[in-house]
Each structure stands twice: as C-alpha cells, then as structure tokens.
Length: 349
Image 1 (cartoon, rainbow, N blue to C red):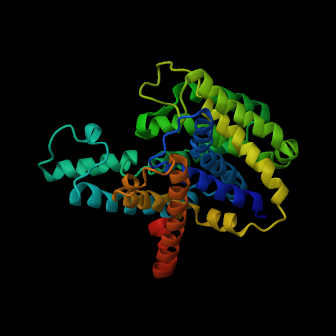
Image 2 (image 1 turned 120 degrees about the horizontal axis):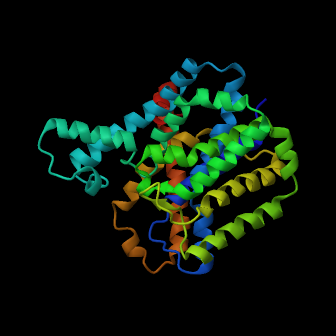
Image 3 (image 1 turned 135 degrees about the vertical axis):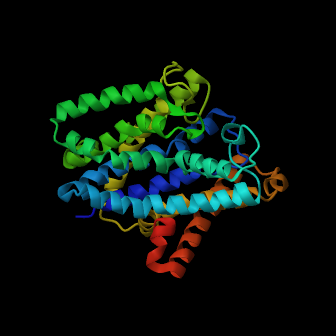
C-alpha cells in the first residue's frame, strides 16, 4: 500500500533542500530572518529519514541485497557519476574553475594521472556540485544494509537505546566542513536513517502519537531554532573538521528531526486530499536534486544580483528559489521526454 503522506513528505523535503541552496545574495541579519534561515537549512535530514522509512516499508519484506544494490546503483550512482563527470569536464577542464581548489589542487596539474586522481577525489567527496556530497555517503548507507536488517530484528527497546546513543554522538561530531568527508557524513546521518526505519516498523503507533500534535511539534521546532541563535549566536548547519573536538551540541539535528514529525503531523490532515504539485515534486525529487545545482550555477554565472541590489535579500531569495525549482522541474521533464526510460540513468527519473 502506497502512503500518500510520504509522497507529499518527499516533495516537501526536496523543496526544503533546494531552498537551502538558493540563498543567493540573502544574508540573514534580523532575528526573524535567522529563524527562517534555520528552518530552511538542514533539509538533508528529512531525505535521510525518509530513505530509512522506505527501506523498511518497501524493500525489507522481500529484501534481496544484490537486487537492492543493483537498483540503487542504476538509479542513484549512475546519474551521480554521469553528472559529476560532466561537471568535471565543464568546471575543471573547460572553464578552469575547480571547486575547492585549496583542498584538492595543492600544486599545479601537469600530468594526465593528476587529472584522473583529481576526478576520483571529486567523485569520492561529491564536491563538484553543491549537493552531490549526499550520494557517496548514502551509497555507503545502502552498502551497509545488512546492518539495518540486523537492527530491524532487534527488540524495540534496544533499537531506541542505540538510536539515542548515536544521535548523541552525531550532535557532538557535527557535519564535516563543506560536507567533504563521506565517512564523517555517514557517522552523522547514520542514526537518522535508523530512526526512519524504526518509524516505519511502528508506523501506526507513530502516526497515532503525533496526530493532532502539530502545534506542539511546531513550537518545538521554533524553540530549537531560537535556542541555536540565542546560545550560539549563529544560524545554519553545524560543521567542523575534527571529530574529537567539542564545539557545542548540534541543535539543528534535533530541530530537523522534530520538523520531520511536525510535517507528518500536518500531512495527516491531507492524507485523503489530492495535492498534485507536492505529489509530482516528490516523484521527480531525485531529478530535481541532481539538476538544481546546475541551474544555480547558471544563474550565478551572470551578474544578475548586482543589478538587483535594491531588492531586499529575502525577496531575492524567494524569487531565486522559485526560479530554481521550476527550472529544475522543466529541465527534468524535458530530459525525460527526450530520453524516455533511459533518463533514469542520467538524472534519476
């Protein structure tokens, strides 16, 4: 049985992720703007939570590890590899604007093998496009599926203790700087995936528990967002280099987990209603994910913002976000029309 609210959830998740990459010239200055930026940032948690949920709900009943990995390789890793190689040719070889040159290019590139090594580093880290870092770590999550099969068979109490412990670890290790370490990201998001699995196992109880609690959950989300700004004087995701250094508790992680349950609580009210835009956006979410960085790069290659400095930053953000999401959908739809079934191997849809 297909869960309509999770189709809607997936649509909202990708909208939030694109919004988090569409700031443009907007710099949040007031407390209200920082609150909004905090709510927009960190949308990847929703994607990972949803991925864990679907792992149990769709794949576990007749789980075949080999078939599962083949499917994920075709639908996730192949589009990622194709678009990453295209980005490497465009950004590194043609335009000579490699991302993070201070990290990946410590010395001039003179030999062919240096370019091959550089390309492999970019593929390992997903650093060629703003959101591609997600794929290397989520592929490791998929590879570790036997560990999640083991988790599913554990008593609920044991699963809960494991998740609480690992979330505590994640809240201390934070995300890697610039999201350039797949192993660091794996450690950070691992319990979020586990939480999605547990919620799928106990779907009825979870949905019953959060029913009609939208206000409470919404206040919790707002409270955690405000807490971060008031305590740390900063907004956005927590990042750091060293796993062992202590730089505070990552409240963004808990805020986004609370947001998952808030969104589900709200969407329960629309379970029997047709929301075509969210449903379509959810169905094309991976294509939007793969294509929106290209749209953003294209926009930023023109001096558009310089000519619009008189417009408030948040207004520009809203316009930028709308243009990026609609352009990504249209681009995905065009590629789908041209390549038909083979487009899944190019853009994940």
